[in-house]
Image (tube, rainbow, N blue to C red; front, side):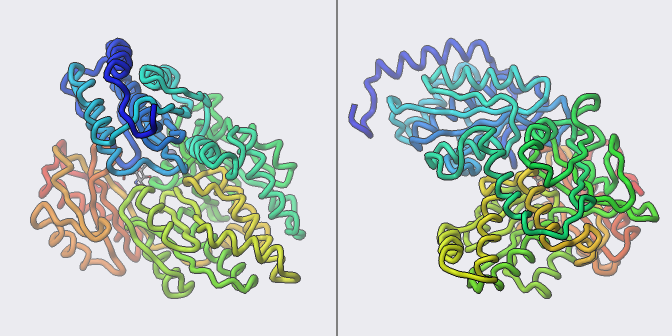
Length: 555
Ligand code: NG1
Ligand code: ZN
Protein backbone atom coordinates (compact mmCIF):
# COMPACT_ATOMS: atom_id res chain seq x y z
CA UNK A 1 0.00 0.00 0.00
CA UNK A 2 1.08 3.60 -0.69
CA UNK A 3 2.08 5.58 2.38
CA UNK A 4 -0.76 7.81 3.49
CA UNK A 5 -3.44 5.59 1.88
CA UNK A 6 -6.15 4.13 4.05
CA UNK A 7 -6.24 0.34 4.27
CA UNK A 8 -9.23 -1.46 2.78
CA UNK A 9 -12.10 -1.68 5.30
CA UNK A 10 -11.75 -5.44 5.49
CA UNK A 11 -8.29 -5.12 7.09
CA UNK A 12 -9.65 -2.71 9.63
CA UNK A 13 -12.55 -4.97 10.50
CA UNK A 14 -10.29 -7.94 11.09
CA UNK A 15 -8.09 -5.85 13.36
CA UNK A 16 -11.05 -4.57 15.27
CA UNK A 17 -12.46 -8.05 15.76
CA UNK A 18 -9.34 -8.88 17.69
CA UNK A 19 -9.70 -5.68 19.70
CA UNK A 20 -13.32 -6.59 20.50
CA UNK A 21 -12.43 -10.09 21.61
CA UNK A 22 -9.46 -9.01 23.72
CA UNK A 23 -11.32 -6.08 25.19
CA UNK A 24 -13.92 -8.45 26.64
CA UNK A 25 -11.09 -9.92 28.72
CA UNK A 26 -10.28 -6.43 30.04
CA UNK A 27 -13.74 -5.00 30.70
CA UNK A 28 -14.27 -1.46 31.93
CA UNK A 29 -16.28 -1.11 35.14
CA UNK A 30 -19.42 0.67 33.95
CA UNK A 31 -19.54 4.37 34.85
CA UNK A 32 -15.90 4.61 35.96
CA UNK A 33 -14.34 7.88 34.79
CA UNK A 34 -10.60 8.51 35.02
CA UNK A 35 -8.47 11.38 33.76
CA UNK A 36 -5.01 11.33 32.16
CA UNK A 37 -3.48 13.59 34.82
CA UNK A 38 -0.15 15.26 35.62
CA UNK A 39 1.63 11.95 35.10
CA UNK A 40 -0.80 9.69 33.24
CA UNK A 41 -3.53 7.60 34.84
CA UNK A 42 -3.02 6.87 38.49
CA UNK A 43 -5.39 5.24 40.97
CA UNK A 44 -6.01 2.02 42.90
CA UNK A 45 -4.53 -0.86 40.89
CA UNK A 46 -7.82 -2.78 40.96
CA UNK A 47 -9.42 -0.16 38.69
CA UNK A 48 -6.77 -0.16 36.01
CA UNK A 49 -6.90 -3.37 33.96
CA UNK A 50 -9.06 -1.93 31.15
CA UNK A 51 -7.01 1.29 31.18
CA UNK A 52 -3.82 -0.69 30.61
CA UNK A 53 -5.34 -2.64 27.71
CA UNK A 54 -6.59 0.57 26.14
CA UNK A 55 -3.25 2.34 26.62
CA UNK A 56 -1.69 -0.60 24.75
CA UNK A 57 -4.12 0.20 21.91
CA UNK A 58 -3.38 3.91 22.06
CA UNK A 59 0.40 3.46 22.16
CA UNK A 60 0.09 1.31 19.03
CA UNK A 61 -1.89 4.03 17.27
CA UNK A 62 0.62 6.66 18.41
CA UNK A 63 3.43 4.52 17.03
CA UNK A 64 1.67 4.13 13.69
CA UNK A 65 1.05 7.87 13.59
CA UNK A 66 4.61 8.92 14.46
CA UNK A 67 6.21 5.99 12.62
CA UNK A 68 8.41 5.60 15.69
CA UNK A 69 8.70 3.51 18.82
CA UNK A 70 6.45 4.57 21.71
CA UNK A 71 6.93 3.69 25.40
CA UNK A 72 4.41 2.59 28.00
CA UNK A 73 5.49 2.67 31.65
CA UNK A 74 3.42 0.92 34.31
CA UNK A 75 4.07 2.70 37.60
CA UNK A 76 2.47 4.89 40.22
CA UNK A 77 5.78 6.51 41.20
CA UNK A 78 5.63 7.73 44.81
CA UNK A 79 2.02 6.61 45.44
CA UNK A 80 1.35 3.77 47.90
CA UNK A 81 1.84 0.13 46.90
CA UNK A 82 -1.91 -0.45 46.34
CA UNK A 83 -2.01 2.14 43.55
CA UNK A 84 -0.70 1.84 40.06
CA UNK A 85 -0.63 3.94 36.94
CA UNK A 86 0.46 4.24 33.35
CA UNK A 87 2.08 6.88 31.20
CA UNK A 88 2.98 7.03 27.54
CA UNK A 89 6.40 8.05 26.29
CA UNK A 90 6.74 9.89 22.96
CA UNK A 91 9.50 9.18 20.39
CA UNK A 92 12.27 11.38 21.82
CA UNK A 93 11.56 10.14 25.33
CA UNK A 94 9.30 13.07 26.20
CA UNK A 95 5.77 13.03 27.59
CA UNK A 96 2.95 12.46 25.12
CA UNK A 97 1.34 15.61 23.61
CA UNK A 98 -1.74 17.35 25.01
CA UNK A 99 -3.98 16.20 22.13
CA UNK A 100 -3.03 12.59 22.75
CA UNK A 101 -3.57 12.99 26.48
CA UNK A 102 -7.10 13.93 25.46
CA UNK A 103 -7.42 10.78 23.34
CA UNK A 104 -6.13 8.74 26.27
CA UNK A 105 -8.90 10.10 28.48
CA UNK A 106 -11.49 9.56 25.72
CA UNK A 107 -10.44 5.97 25.17
CA UNK A 108 -10.18 5.21 28.88
CA UNK A 109 -13.69 6.41 29.59
CA UNK A 110 -15.54 4.89 26.61
CA UNK A 111 -18.03 2.33 27.89
CA UNK A 112 -17.32 -1.22 26.77
CA UNK A 113 -19.76 -1.11 23.83
CA UNK A 114 -18.40 2.26 22.64
CA UNK A 115 -14.72 1.33 22.58
CA UNK A 116 -14.48 0.56 18.86
CA UNK A 117 -16.22 3.81 17.97
CA UNK A 118 -13.81 5.74 20.20
CA UNK A 119 -10.87 3.97 18.58
CA UNK A 120 -12.11 4.67 15.05
CA UNK A 121 -12.68 8.29 15.99
CA UNK A 122 -9.01 8.71 16.91
CA UNK A 123 -7.87 6.87 13.77
CA UNK A 124 -10.00 9.17 11.63
CA UNK A 125 -9.07 12.41 13.39
CA UNK A 126 -5.37 11.61 13.11
CA UNK A 127 -5.69 10.01 9.64
CA UNK A 128 -3.70 7.01 10.86
CA UNK A 129 -2.49 4.54 8.28
CA UNK A 130 -3.44 1.27 9.93
CA UNK A 131 -1.12 -0.78 7.75
CA UNK A 132 1.89 1.10 9.18
CA UNK A 133 4.02 -1.08 11.48
CA UNK A 134 3.94 -0.24 15.18
CA UNK A 135 6.53 -0.75 17.94
CA UNK A 136 5.93 -0.32 21.62
CA UNK A 137 8.44 -0.58 24.48
CA UNK A 138 7.01 -1.55 27.86
CA UNK A 139 8.41 -1.27 31.37
CA UNK A 140 7.09 -1.74 34.87
CA UNK A 141 7.95 -0.98 38.48
CA UNK A 142 8.08 -3.43 41.40
CA UNK A 143 4.44 -3.16 42.54
CA UNK A 144 2.73 -6.52 42.93
CA UNK A 145 0.03 -5.40 40.49
CA UNK A 146 2.50 -4.32 37.80
CA UNK A 147 3.04 -7.78 36.26
CA UNK A 148 -0.60 -8.41 35.33
CA UNK A 149 -1.20 -4.78 34.39
CA UNK A 150 1.74 -4.71 32.00
CA UNK A 151 0.42 -7.96 30.52
CA UNK A 152 -2.84 -6.08 29.80
CA UNK A 153 -0.81 -3.40 27.94
CA UNK A 154 0.81 -6.15 25.85
CA UNK A 155 -2.65 -7.53 25.00
CA UNK A 156 -3.67 -4.08 23.77
CA UNK A 157 -0.59 -3.78 21.58
CA UNK A 158 -1.03 -7.19 20.01
CA UNK A 159 -4.78 -6.69 19.50
CA UNK A 160 -3.87 -3.94 16.99
CA UNK A 161 -1.03 -5.96 15.48
CA UNK A 162 1.76 -3.91 17.09
CA UNK A 163 5.19 -5.33 17.96
CA UNK A 164 6.37 -5.02 21.51
CA UNK A 165 9.54 -5.21 23.50
CA UNK A 166 8.94 -5.89 27.17
CA UNK A 167 11.83 -4.53 29.27
CA UNK A 168 10.25 -5.92 32.43
CA UNK A 169 11.44 -4.23 35.61
CA UNK A 170 13.02 -0.86 34.76
CA UNK A 171 12.93 2.63 36.23
CA UNK A 172 10.73 5.19 34.47
CA UNK A 173 13.75 7.14 33.18
CA UNK A 174 15.33 3.93 31.89
CA UNK A 175 12.28 3.34 29.71
CA UNK A 176 12.39 6.95 28.44
CA UNK A 177 16.05 6.41 27.62
CA UNK A 178 15.33 3.16 25.68
CA UNK A 179 12.67 4.87 23.56
CA UNK A 180 14.99 7.76 22.73
CA UNK A 181 17.91 5.42 21.90
CA UNK A 182 15.70 3.36 19.61
CA UNK A 183 14.31 6.36 17.75
CA UNK A 184 17.72 7.97 17.30
CA UNK A 185 19.12 4.73 15.88
CA UNK A 186 21.49 4.38 18.80
CA UNK A 187 22.86 7.95 18.66
CA UNK A 188 21.64 8.63 22.21
CA UNK A 189 23.02 5.29 23.42
CA UNK A 190 22.35 1.58 23.21
CA UNK A 191 18.70 0.67 23.92
CA UNK A 192 19.50 -1.86 26.65
CA UNK A 193 19.76 -1.65 30.43
CA UNK A 194 23.44 -2.52 30.06
CA UNK A 195 23.83 0.31 27.52
CA UNK A 196 22.24 2.70 30.02
CA UNK A 197 24.72 1.74 32.76
CA UNK A 198 27.65 1.97 30.39
CA UNK A 199 26.74 5.40 29.03
CA UNK A 200 26.11 7.13 32.35
CA UNK A 201 28.82 5.40 34.39
CA UNK A 202 31.51 5.98 31.79
CA UNK A 203 30.68 9.68 31.75
CA UNK A 204 30.74 9.73 35.57
CA UNK A 205 34.17 8.08 35.68
CA UNK A 206 35.51 10.49 33.06
CA UNK A 207 34.14 13.41 35.04
CA UNK A 208 35.58 12.36 38.38
CA UNK A 209 38.96 11.05 37.26
CA UNK A 210 40.54 14.47 37.72
CA UNK A 211 38.92 15.15 41.07
CA UNK A 212 42.22 14.20 42.66
CA UNK A 213 41.59 15.41 46.21
CA UNK A 214 38.38 13.40 46.61
CA UNK A 215 38.94 11.12 49.62
CA UNK A 216 37.28 7.75 50.18
CA UNK A 217 35.11 9.42 52.80
CA UNK A 218 33.84 11.89 50.26
CA UNK A 219 33.12 9.06 47.85
CA UNK A 220 30.59 7.56 50.22
CA UNK A 221 26.85 8.04 49.74
CA UNK A 222 23.89 6.50 51.57
CA UNK A 223 20.90 5.89 49.31
CA UNK A 224 17.29 5.25 50.33
CA UNK A 225 15.83 3.20 47.46
CA UNK A 226 12.19 3.71 48.62
CA UNK A 227 11.87 -0.11 48.50
CA UNK A 228 11.35 0.28 44.79
CA UNK A 229 12.80 -0.35 41.35
CA UNK A 230 15.56 2.25 41.81
CA UNK A 231 17.12 0.09 44.52
CA UNK A 232 17.25 -2.97 42.23
CA UNK A 233 18.76 -0.94 39.42
CA UNK A 234 21.32 0.74 41.64
CA UNK A 235 22.59 -2.70 42.68
CA UNK A 236 23.01 -3.61 39.01
CA UNK A 237 24.77 -0.32 38.26
CA UNK A 238 27.29 -0.49 41.12
CA UNK A 239 29.84 -2.68 39.37
CA UNK A 240 30.04 -0.17 36.49
CA UNK A 241 31.15 2.57 38.90
CA UNK A 242 34.55 0.96 39.41
CA UNK A 243 34.58 1.95 43.09
CA UNK A 244 34.55 5.66 42.19
CA UNK A 245 31.41 5.93 44.31
CA UNK A 246 30.74 3.83 47.42
CA UNK A 247 27.04 3.33 47.91
CA UNK A 248 25.33 2.08 51.08
CA UNK A 249 21.87 1.10 49.95
CA UNK A 250 18.91 1.15 52.35
CA UNK A 251 15.24 0.36 51.77
CA UNK A 252 16.19 -1.98 48.96
CA UNK A 253 12.82 -3.72 48.88
CA UNK A 254 13.94 -6.88 50.64
CA UNK A 255 11.80 -6.22 53.72
CA UNK A 256 10.07 -2.83 53.69
CA UNK A 257 7.00 -1.66 51.85
CA UNK A 258 7.25 0.52 48.73
CA UNK A 259 7.29 4.27 49.51
CA UNK A 260 6.11 3.57 53.05
CA UNK A 261 7.73 6.15 55.33
CA UNK A 262 10.61 6.36 52.92
CA UNK A 263 11.47 7.65 49.49
CA UNK A 264 11.91 11.15 48.07
CA UNK A 265 8.30 12.27 48.45
CA UNK A 266 8.11 11.24 52.11
CA UNK A 267 11.41 12.96 52.92
CA UNK A 268 10.50 16.15 51.05
CA UNK A 269 6.97 16.53 52.39
CA UNK A 270 7.67 15.39 55.97
CA UNK A 271 11.06 17.13 56.09
CA UNK A 272 12.40 14.15 57.98
CA UNK A 273 14.82 11.31 57.20
CA UNK A 274 13.24 8.07 55.97
CA UNK A 275 12.77 5.12 58.28
CA UNK A 276 14.89 2.07 57.56
CA UNK A 277 18.04 4.10 56.99
CA UNK A 278 21.08 4.74 59.14
CA UNK A 279 21.66 8.51 58.96
CA UNK A 280 25.01 9.29 60.58
CA UNK A 281 25.56 12.89 61.60
CA UNK A 282 27.07 14.99 58.81
CA UNK A 283 26.94 12.21 56.19
CA UNK A 284 25.61 12.72 52.69
CA UNK A 285 22.36 10.84 52.02
CA UNK A 286 19.76 10.79 49.25
CA UNK A 287 16.34 9.29 48.57
CA UNK A 288 14.83 8.07 45.30
CA UNK A 289 11.10 7.81 44.74
CA UNK A 290 9.27 4.59 43.81
CA UNK A 291 10.11 4.68 40.09
CA UNK A 292 13.45 6.51 40.46
CA UNK A 293 12.67 9.69 38.57
CA UNK A 294 13.06 11.93 41.63
CA UNK A 295 15.92 12.47 44.06
CA UNK A 296 16.46 14.62 47.14
CA UNK A 297 19.61 14.90 49.30
CA UNK A 298 19.89 15.50 53.05
CA UNK A 299 22.04 15.21 56.16
CA UNK A 300 21.62 15.68 59.89
CA UNK A 301 23.99 18.02 61.74
CA UNK A 302 25.74 17.44 65.07
CA UNK A 303 22.66 18.75 66.92
CA UNK A 304 20.50 16.17 65.16
CA UNK A 305 18.84 18.81 63.01
CA UNK A 306 17.68 17.60 59.59
CA UNK A 307 18.76 19.53 56.47
CA UNK A 308 17.00 18.89 53.17
CA UNK A 309 18.59 19.66 49.81
CA UNK A 310 15.67 19.47 47.42
CA UNK A 311 15.18 20.04 43.70
CA UNK A 312 15.78 23.78 44.11
CA UNK A 313 19.15 23.23 45.77
CA UNK A 314 20.01 20.66 43.10
CA UNK A 315 19.13 23.11 40.31
CA UNK A 316 21.29 25.75 41.98
CA UNK A 317 24.29 23.42 42.33
CA UNK A 318 24.05 22.25 38.73
CA UNK A 319 23.51 25.68 37.20
CA UNK A 320 26.38 27.18 39.22
CA UNK A 321 28.66 24.40 38.02
CA UNK A 322 27.58 24.81 34.39
CA UNK A 323 27.93 28.57 34.51
CA UNK A 324 31.47 28.29 35.86
CA UNK A 325 32.41 25.81 33.14
CA UNK A 326 30.94 28.05 30.44
CA UNK A 327 33.05 30.96 31.72
CA UNK A 328 36.20 28.81 31.84
CA UNK A 329 35.48 27.50 28.35
CA UNK A 330 34.77 31.00 27.06
CA UNK A 331 31.49 29.78 25.61
CA UNK A 332 28.65 32.23 25.24
CA UNK A 333 25.62 30.00 25.81
CA UNK A 334 22.34 31.11 27.34
CA UNK A 335 21.53 29.22 30.53
CA UNK A 336 18.10 29.22 32.17
CA UNK A 337 16.58 27.60 35.25
CA UNK A 338 12.94 26.51 35.14
CA UNK A 339 10.98 26.13 38.38
CA UNK A 340 7.35 25.85 39.52
CA UNK A 341 5.42 27.77 42.17
CA UNK A 342 6.65 25.18 44.72
CA UNK A 343 10.23 26.47 44.39
CA UNK A 344 11.43 27.92 47.65
CA UNK A 345 11.42 31.75 47.52
CA UNK A 346 15.06 31.83 48.67
CA UNK A 347 16.14 29.73 45.70
CA UNK A 348 14.31 32.00 43.28
CA UNK A 349 15.94 35.09 44.82
CA UNK A 350 19.38 33.51 44.79
CA UNK A 351 19.15 32.39 41.16
CA UNK A 352 17.80 35.74 40.03
CA UNK A 353 19.81 38.20 42.14
CA UNK A 354 23.12 36.45 42.82
CA UNK A 355 23.52 33.95 40.00
CA UNK A 356 21.77 36.18 37.51
CA UNK A 357 20.52 33.30 35.37
CA UNK A 358 17.35 33.51 33.30
CA UNK A 359 14.49 32.20 35.40
CA UNK A 360 11.13 30.76 34.30
CA UNK A 361 8.16 29.56 36.34
CA UNK A 362 5.73 27.04 34.81
CA UNK A 363 2.74 25.03 35.94
CA UNK A 364 3.38 21.85 37.95
CA UNK A 365 4.18 18.73 35.91
CA UNK A 366 7.43 17.96 34.16
CA UNK A 367 6.02 18.30 30.68
CA UNK A 368 5.58 22.04 31.30
CA UNK A 369 9.09 22.45 32.69
CA UNK A 370 10.59 20.34 29.93
CA UNK A 371 9.01 22.46 27.20
CA UNK A 372 10.13 25.70 28.82
CA UNK A 373 13.70 24.38 29.22
CA UNK A 374 13.85 23.46 25.53
CA UNK A 375 13.79 27.15 24.60
CA UNK A 376 17.35 27.79 25.80
CA UNK A 377 20.88 26.66 24.89
CA UNK A 378 21.00 25.06 28.33
CA UNK A 379 17.78 24.62 30.32
CA UNK A 380 18.08 23.33 33.89
CA UNK A 381 14.67 22.32 35.19
CA UNK A 382 13.74 20.93 38.59
CA UNK A 383 10.56 20.62 40.59
CA UNK A 384 11.16 21.27 44.28
CA UNK A 385 10.31 17.59 44.88
CA UNK A 386 13.50 16.55 43.08
CA UNK A 387 12.22 15.72 39.62
CA UNK A 388 14.36 17.35 36.99
CA UNK A 389 17.16 17.29 34.48
CA UNK A 390 19.16 19.50 32.14
CA UNK A 391 18.49 19.97 28.43
CA UNK A 392 21.17 21.04 25.95
CA UNK A 393 20.18 22.32 22.53
CA UNK A 394 21.74 20.56 19.56
CA UNK A 395 23.66 23.74 18.73
CA UNK A 396 25.01 23.95 22.29
CA UNK A 397 26.19 20.35 22.19
CA UNK A 398 27.93 20.96 18.87
CA UNK A 399 29.68 24.07 20.16
CA UNK A 400 30.96 22.16 23.19
CA UNK A 401 32.20 19.33 21.02
CA UNK A 402 33.90 21.69 18.60
CA UNK A 403 35.68 23.46 21.43
CA UNK A 404 36.78 20.18 23.02
CA UNK A 405 38.44 19.29 19.71
CA UNK A 406 39.90 22.68 18.82
CA UNK A 407 41.06 24.23 22.09
CA UNK A 408 43.84 23.65 24.59
CA UNK A 409 44.67 24.34 28.22
CA UNK A 410 41.95 25.50 30.60
CA UNK A 411 39.42 25.99 27.83
CA UNK A 412 39.87 22.42 26.65
CA UNK A 413 39.63 21.09 30.19
CA UNK A 414 36.34 22.96 30.68
CA UNK A 415 34.99 21.83 27.33
CA UNK A 416 35.79 18.19 28.13
CA UNK A 417 34.10 18.53 31.51
CA UNK A 418 31.06 20.00 29.77
CA UNK A 419 31.05 17.16 27.26
CA UNK A 420 31.10 14.52 30.00
CA UNK A 421 28.48 16.47 31.92
CA UNK A 422 26.20 16.27 28.89
CA UNK A 423 26.82 12.51 28.72
CA UNK A 424 26.10 11.84 32.39
CA UNK A 425 22.69 13.51 32.13
CA UNK A 426 19.56 11.68 31.02
CA UNK A 427 18.05 14.45 28.93
CA UNK A 428 14.84 12.54 28.23
CA UNK A 429 13.37 13.03 31.71
CA UNK A 430 14.30 13.56 35.37
CA UNK A 431 16.31 10.54 36.48
CA UNK A 432 17.33 9.83 40.09
CA UNK A 433 20.30 7.68 39.07
CA UNK A 434 21.68 10.07 36.46
CA UNK A 435 21.03 13.12 38.67
CA UNK A 436 22.80 11.36 41.53
CA UNK A 437 25.87 10.68 39.36
CA UNK A 438 25.93 14.30 38.20
CA UNK A 439 25.62 15.70 41.73
CA UNK A 440 28.27 13.32 43.06
CA UNK A 441 30.59 14.32 40.23
CA UNK A 442 30.07 18.05 40.82
CA UNK A 443 30.73 17.72 44.57
CA UNK A 444 33.86 15.67 43.85
CA UNK A 445 35.19 18.09 41.21
CA UNK A 446 34.51 21.15 43.34
CA UNK A 447 35.77 19.40 46.49
CA UNK A 448 32.54 20.51 48.12
CA UNK A 449 30.83 18.97 51.15
CA UNK A 450 27.06 18.66 51.44
CA UNK A 451 27.20 21.30 54.19
CA UNK A 452 28.94 23.76 51.87
CA UNK A 453 26.40 23.02 49.16
CA UNK A 454 23.58 23.57 51.66
CA UNK A 455 25.08 26.90 52.70
CA UNK A 456 24.75 28.44 49.19
CA UNK A 457 21.44 29.90 50.35
CA UNK A 458 19.10 29.30 53.28
CA UNK A 459 15.64 27.91 52.54
CA UNK A 460 12.60 29.76 53.78
CA UNK A 461 10.67 27.52 56.20
CA UNK A 462 7.72 26.02 54.35
CA UNK A 463 4.81 23.63 54.69
CA UNK A 464 2.75 21.58 52.24
CA UNK A 465 -0.73 20.35 53.22
CA UNK A 466 -3.65 18.58 51.51
CA UNK A 467 -7.34 19.43 51.80
CA UNK A 468 -10.18 17.13 50.77
CA UNK A 469 -12.99 18.82 48.87
CA UNK A 470 -16.02 17.34 47.09
CA UNK A 471 -14.84 18.47 43.65
CA UNK A 472 -11.32 19.83 43.36
CA UNK A 473 -12.05 21.16 39.86
CA UNK A 474 -13.85 24.14 41.44
CA UNK A 475 -10.38 25.57 41.97
CA UNK A 476 -9.06 27.27 38.88
CA UNK A 477 -5.64 28.92 38.83
CA UNK A 478 -3.68 31.44 36.78
CA UNK A 479 -0.15 32.87 36.64
CA UNK A 480 1.61 29.46 36.69
CA UNK A 481 -0.75 28.34 39.48
CA UNK A 482 0.33 31.13 41.80
CA UNK A 483 -3.16 32.68 41.96
CA UNK A 484 -6.61 31.11 42.37
CA UNK A 485 -9.18 32.67 40.03
CA UNK A 486 -12.05 30.55 41.40
CA UNK A 487 -13.91 29.98 43.67
CA UNK A 488 -14.78 33.61 44.33
CA UNK A 489 -13.10 35.09 47.35
CA UNK A 490 -10.45 32.41 47.80
CA UNK A 491 -7.52 34.43 46.45
CA UNK A 492 -8.59 37.47 48.46
CA UNK A 493 -8.69 35.29 51.58
CA UNK A 494 -5.19 33.94 50.85
CA UNK A 495 -3.86 37.47 50.21
CA UNK A 496 -5.28 38.62 53.55
CA UNK A 497 -3.65 35.72 55.42
CA UNK A 498 -0.27 36.10 53.71
CA UNK A 499 -0.11 39.76 54.84
CA UNK A 500 -0.04 38.66 58.49
CA UNK A 501 3.38 37.01 58.19
CA UNK A 502 6.92 38.04 57.30
CA UNK A 503 8.41 37.05 53.90
CA UNK A 504 5.27 34.98 53.34
CA UNK A 505 3.81 33.40 50.22
CA UNK A 506 1.04 30.85 49.76
CA UNK A 507 -0.94 29.30 46.93
CA UNK A 508 -3.36 26.43 46.35
CA UNK A 509 -4.01 24.15 43.38
CA UNK A 510 -5.91 20.96 42.64
CA UNK A 511 -3.57 17.95 42.50
CA UNK A 512 -3.29 16.14 39.18
CA UNK A 513 -2.43 12.81 40.78
CA UNK A 514 -4.54 12.65 43.95
CA UNK A 515 -8.10 13.64 44.80
CA UNK A 516 -6.98 16.57 46.98
CA UNK A 517 -6.26 20.29 46.89
CA UNK A 518 -2.63 21.06 47.70
CA UNK A 519 -1.74 24.00 49.91
CA UNK A 520 1.75 25.51 49.99
CA UNK A 521 2.98 28.18 52.38
CA UNK A 522 6.35 29.67 53.24
CA UNK A 523 7.33 32.36 55.72
CA UNK A 524 10.21 33.63 57.84
CA UNK A 525 9.75 31.01 60.60
CA UNK A 526 8.51 27.42 60.64
CA UNK A 527 5.75 28.39 63.09
CA UNK A 528 4.53 31.08 60.70
CA UNK A 529 4.71 28.75 57.66
CA UNK A 530 2.75 26.09 59.57
CA UNK A 531 0.16 28.58 60.80
CA UNK A 532 -0.26 30.14 57.36
CA UNK A 533 -0.62 26.73 55.67
CA UNK A 534 -3.24 25.78 58.22
CA UNK A 535 -5.20 29.02 57.83
CA UNK A 536 -5.13 28.74 54.04
CA UNK A 537 -6.33 25.11 54.36
CA UNK A 538 -9.29 26.36 56.37
CA UNK A 539 -10.07 28.96 53.69
CA UNK A 540 -10.01 26.21 51.03
CA UNK A 541 -12.18 23.99 53.19
CA UNK A 542 -14.76 26.75 53.68
CA UNK A 543 -14.75 28.31 50.22
CA UNK A 544 -14.10 25.31 47.97
CA UNK A 545 -16.45 22.68 49.39
CA UNK A 546 -14.33 20.87 52.00
CA UNK A 547 -15.41 17.38 53.03
CA UNK A 548 -14.78 15.47 56.28
CA UNK A 549 -13.76 17.40 59.39
CA UNK A 550 -12.19 20.85 59.27
CA UNK A 551 -8.40 20.77 58.81
CA UNK A 552 -6.63 20.72 62.18
CA UNK A 553 -3.33 22.47 62.91
CA UNK A 554 -0.72 19.80 62.20
CA UNK A 555 2.32 21.05 64.07
P1 NG1 B 1 0.29 16.84 41.73
O1 NG1 B 1 -0.39 15.69 42.42
O2 NG1 B 1 -0.41 17.33 40.50
O3 NG1 B 1 0.67 17.91 42.69
C1 NG1 B 1 2.67 15.59 41.88
C2 NG1 B 1 3.81 16.56 42.09
C3 NG1 B 1 4.28 17.05 40.74
C4 NG1 B 1 4.63 15.90 39.79
C5 NG1 B 1 3.53 14.85 39.78
C6 NG1 B 1 3.87 13.61 39.02
C7 NG1 B 1 4.15 18.15 43.92
C8 NG1 B 1 3.61 19.30 44.67
N1 NG1 B 1 3.40 17.70 42.90
O4 NG1 B 1 1.67 16.26 41.15
O5 NG1 B 1 5.34 17.91 40.91
O6 NG1 B 1 5.87 15.35 40.13
O7 NG1 B 1 3.12 14.49 41.10
O8 NG1 B 1 4.55 12.65 39.74
O9 NG1 B 1 5.23 17.67 44.25
ZN1 ZN C 1 8.36 9.16 40.18
